[in-house]
Amino acid sequence: MQLYKACLESFNFENLPLIVDVVEPLWFPPVGNKEFKRFNVEYIVRNNICENDYRFQLVDENAQNEILAAAFFARKGDSSIVEEWFARESQRFPEEWRAASGMSKTYLTLMDERTLALMNDDDIKLSFFASRKPGAGSVILDKALEKLRPEGWKNLYLWTDCDCNWQWYIKHGFTLVQEDVYEPFSDEHEDYKTYIFKRKL
Image 1 (tube, one colour):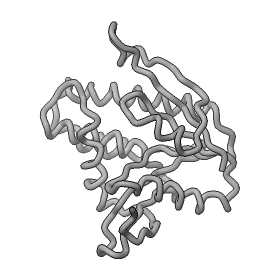
Image 2 (cartoon, rainbow, N blue to C red):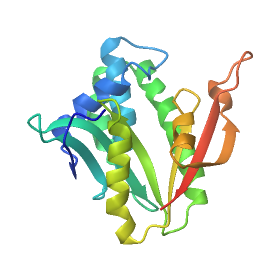
Image 3 (cartoon, one colour):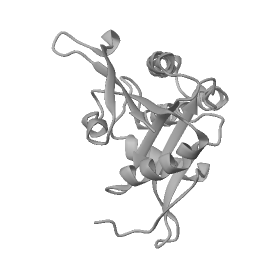
């Protein structure tokens, strides 16, 4: 049962640490200490934020505009705003640790390229979204799509992988359009699977 009054706003970067808090327990590099782990997770989140006006947050008007969720979208041709931040912030870590972030970047870039290759110019991609309250993920997605539809976007694409709750997208109207195995993250016991989904707007 939803107990908040949700309002969609442009994303406030002051709230970025709260979003990193949500995903930090889920993503971790193979090397480094706790500080580097958080840095790497923030790097992944920032990598999904593009220079456009499609960066949203959901706030609770009944709780002093507490942030409930965030969602970031990308059009074909949009670019991330992460590189300058990474060049500055990564210097405090050893080179071998920074190489782990490079592995993350290689993976993110490949999956973005695969997804964008399926898209037309009038399609848009959900790059990232995270919820801080139960049910807020569905709400921010619905409200963001209400905002996007009048602009003429035809389809919403996204990619995810087996480390995430990819079944959620099937339950929310998305169609699986591509499934692959990412060999660098696989081992002899289990394939690391990636998924690209599509939903008509």
